[in-house]
Each structure stands twice: as C-alpha cells, then as structure tokens.
Image (cartoon, rainbow over all chains, first blue to last red):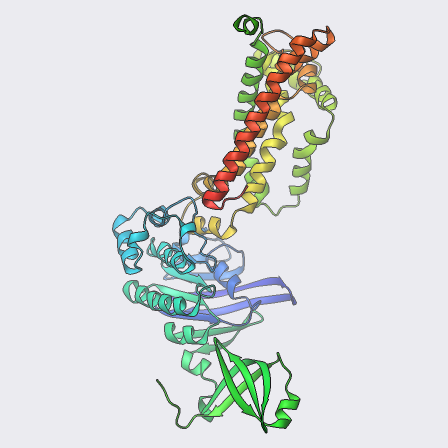
Length: 282
Length: 232
C-alpha cells in the first residue's frame, strides 16, 4: 500500500494554490492522474520522486519516504520516472542509457527485446525517433525494478499511431513486472485502456476518484455520445447548413439549422452530442 | 633562417605556456564545483557570487595587480603567514604569478562552464538522480560529457587568456628572466629599448599561436554541435 498525505503551497499562474492530497494506492495497480494544467499533477509526481519539497508523509510498502522528521533522498527511493521530453543521456548509447541505471545486462536485454529496440542498442538518442526515444526512456525507468513508476504525460508528444503502440507496450511491461504505476494523462482513451483507477485533480485537490468507466463515461446514464470539438467552418448547401467540426484527430460534418448557424461562431469550442441507441462499431 | 631562429630566446614563451597550463589546471579544479553550484542554486547569494566572479573582466589589470601584490606581500596577513610559517615568498616569483593568474582568468573558466551546465536539460539531471546516482557521479558522467563544447571553450580560452595577460603579471611578477618574464612582458621590454625587430618576431609568434588556438576551438565546437546537437 502507498499512503500519501501531503500539502504544499504552489505559486502558479492563477495565484497561490494549496496542493493538498490524501490518497491510498494499492500495490501493483495502475493509476491515472488527470486534470487541467496547473492543477498540481506534475508537482505531485515530483514530490513523490523527492524532487520537490512538501509537508506531510509518504509511505510506500511500509517504508517511510518522508514524514515530519526525515526525508528519503531521491536516489534512495528506488523509483522509475518517465518524462514527457524523454530526458535521455545524449552522450550514451541506448544500451548505456539503460546500464547507467543498473549494470544488469540480462534485464537490459529483456527490456530492449520487449520494446523491439534490440537492433538500436548501439545508437545514440539523437538518431532515434520520438517514439523510439520514449521507449528507451520507459525501459530505462524499469532498469532498477522500481517500487513505483511515475510517468508525466509520457505519450503526449507522440502521434496517435505511435501513442497506441506505446500504450500496448506500457501495458505489457506493467503485466510483466507488476510495478505500481502513476501516470499523468489527458487522453481519456489512454486512461481507459491502461488504468484501473483515475484520480482527477482540480486546484490542488482530488475532485474525482474512481474506476475509469465511472469517471470518464459521464454520459452513461443518458445514453448519449458527447464530443468536444472545434467549429472550423459553416457551409451553406442549398437550404441546409453544414458545420465542419474537428473532434480529436478527425473532421466531421454535422447538419445544423439556420438559427444554429447564426448563433455559432467559427473557431469556438462546441459540444456535439447525439442519442446512441444503435451505433455502428467497426 | 635557422641561424635567425637560433637567435630567438624562447624562454619567455616556455614560461608563458607553463604559467597558462598550471593556471588552467588549477582553475578547472576550482571552477568546476563553483560553476555547478551557480548553475543549480536558487539562492539569493548567486548574483553576488556571479558579480565577484566577473570582476576581473571589468577591473583594470593594474587594480587587480595592485591588490594581489599587496595581499601576497609581507605587508598583508596572507603574505606574512606564508613567509613566516612555510618560508614561501609569494611575490616576484612563479608561485605569485600562478596565484595572480588564477584570479585574473577565473571568469573565463567559470562562465562558459556555468552557462553550459545551465543549458542542460534539468529533467536529464533529475533522471540521473532518480537512477540513484549522486551529484558527483551525475556531474562527471552526465553533465560534463554533454557540455563538451562549453568545456573546450572554458579550457582553451582560459589558457589563451593567461598566455595573453600582461598588466597583472608585470605588477605581481616583475620581469625576472626565466622566473617571471613571460612573452608579453618580454615584448614590452623590447619596445621599451626600441628593439623593434625582436618585438615584431615575438608579437608575430603570439598572434599566430593565438589564432591557431582559437580557430581549433571553433572548428571543434562546430563539429561537436553537428554531431550531438550539443550545447555551446
């Protein structure tokens, strides 16, 4: 069990905010941390890593990481951390990046094989693609068999197909090693696919905490599809109006009435919803 | 031609290079922790330390030379201590020159190292701490290898700057042949006694050497940046 009870004053863009978190996390579980930017997600991760100071206690598997009297240094916590910008060591090859953490050649080979990086083991990070770099970073974080794996938006800089591939890899690694994982993510599909629990922060406080299904599928009761998108253009075709809306990575056309066409503004954020009695899945 | 070169006294050049090499070595050891501290600290004393470090750039060499001369002489507690306890005189000898040069060239070692360290990805350094590595190991295995151009600049410019110093050296060391008479002082003396041909030869050698040194730094840095996308 991981017990977190911390508080810290943050000076953000919106003035002073009090980060105050009290959580218990099951071992071997996969927790997603979500919430708008500036809500304290990254800071919470950094506090868990010992990279930032905070008041309170952190206990991981019976070991005190910090309390009123003492604070365990980052070096001694035995964690893995995956940064959004990979943070690889440019002066070392892929293999050396992993072995720098721990000289465990067997684990290194296994991880490289699992992530299909074996052939790139001698390459330096700057010659790799974004997706490859993040896979190296993920492998590096696993090298000391961490008690806790922290990931700060690990996939948000990658394109959708690479993201989906890496999600599968993260899941495979989680199954293989059973590492307790906390991942910051904004992507609902990613959270749904990977995590067993999602915690939503707002202004430094936990506002939602539950199964991804319950937290993310807000519209489950009304049987509606609801998507947030950006209105790109309104085209008049004969007597009807067609709105072109960008939802996620996709553009859709929606028929709207003339009064809607007048009230909507190009470039504004809109919500597209419909009843979903018999949707087609393919 | 050979005879002509045999008439040139190379001792001042040898002395200049010996002084520059010693100074660069000592300054590297002193500046590494200082530059690292300055690059990582958020303390309020940082600007104060930075200003002190940069002072030798703006101060006239005569001011710096005067203070160092005073501090190292028997008139000051420091000079008196070294002479009474160890029997070492610190002025008008090579030791004094090294101490003076270390003050004079300090910013040229600290500043490139500091900006190199500051330009490093903070997450990368944190990744090293998270991997269980301490500060010293992180500096030597992660930070320094990734600021090679800055490291090269710091070492070479410090070396070249020490070879090129004149005012401080003259004040603290005087002009004792083989002990404190470095190339720049030798040139000054040639001009003073109106031996312009020797002054020309010495000056020409200095210009050529300085140019070659600087050129090699810039070529090295250009190659490094192309290779690893490194930080200058």
